[in-house]
Amino acid sequence: MMQMIDMNFSGVYERRERLAEVMVDLTGLSGTNAYCSDEAVDVIREKLAQFPAEGIHFLDSGNYHYATLFWLEKIRTPYQLVVFDHHTDMQPSAWGDELLSCGSWIRTALLHDPHLQKVWIAGTQEEAYLSEMRERIRLITESELSDPEKAFSGLDRETPVYISVDKDVLSEKAVDTNWDQGNLQTEVLLDCLRYLFRQHPVIGIDVCGEPDVNASDTEIKKSEEIDRKIVQVF
Image (cartoon, rainbow, N blue to C red; front, side, top):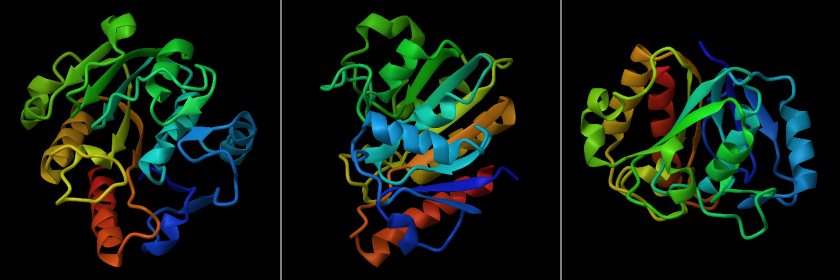
């Protein structure tokens, strides 16, 4: 069983039943909401230093999706990145390419991670900001995900995969995130994860897209149940 870790930025994981063995407390850290300051980068790296990339990592809401990069930088061999997300997260950062943000972290990874071979972004319709790196990116639409074997047929079976899931790829009936959402059904996402885990060497996985910390108990519970189902796959 992979080790599970909560990266608790907003406090939302204190409102659900504990899933992870480790809770990394980041609630008092400034400069983290939607972007990550240089000072916060140093603190987060120090807090995560003892943990490997292997595992299941919960990253809080989509505002903190950039935290995937802290796990990716621990990978020292060639790998592929599969991201389930309603957005491409390829937008040039308003603060420059050196500052991490939730809307530009994939672009940052492609620019600076020498081990990252290719990125597969599943569940988005966006095409913006892809042109300069298009040869290293494969977009998979929601409709294509109904057949995981076909959708991921181009993945190299010999190169390990890291998986990142933003629950905003799911329909609003499934979960209420704090970003605009897609229409993917939970079972389709789980079928894709099962396929990837069976057919490819998986290094680790992270999950974000939790509801706002002040969301209703019902919405918190719905999100927790999806997390549980993802854990069961791995």
